[in-house]
Length: 276
Image (cartoon, rainbow, N blue to C red; front, side):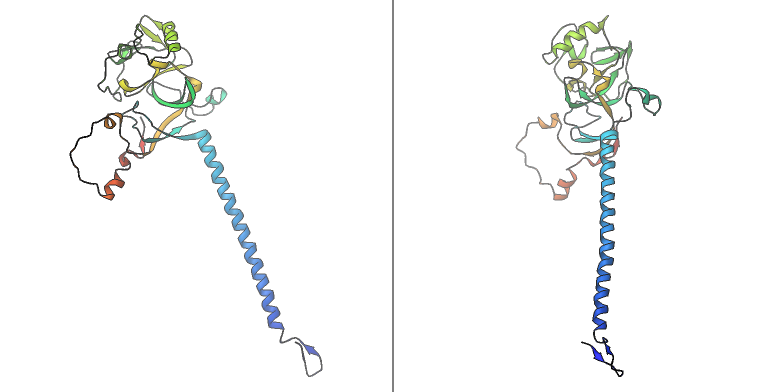
């Protein structure tokens, strides 16, 4: 409502504060809106960048895997979670001369696509590279007539198997041997030694008596090799095959405290361990 001043001119002094407050409110709302949307946009851009970097790393640099069997004990235990360096060996071609890639070498622990089923990943240790002459005598590995020093290998008690321990044995004694591999192996054996062809690798599990490896299904092609596991980032406390088959008895035991249960959930001492 306007008022009339001394000169007879109408004024809006009463309405002016309300109008000013409305204008200030609209300006404040505009400022908040102007600040909120850029912040949301920046946050979205940051999250998108993190996702892109993570996808790149998982696709080309590292990949997580979990150990499901005892074939690599004691180097890798059932329940270990690994990070695998997928770029360490590099792709074939001109890039290998530009980037600091390394060759696949004897003693490397590698992850690869299983030759009999490429959809599966397997982890073993490289024992023979192209051109090597391989034989086993009483379970001991000989490469190019030299007995190998293998402190990582273990030999748990099991049944006698000449094919496994006297490889390459001339007798077909194990039904677990792939028939196609058996025929190929006979062609690659010279003077009682298996000669590794070009572009192929001979691998064994560290748990020699409980590993289905190159002795049973053949060589690993270079193209199947995914990378080099280098780091254990977590390890679930799962029983090994030996622990799982232990017969229970009737002796009563003390219940564990909740803290002990939590502490036994994982093998904390294996976390952040470098793989050799």
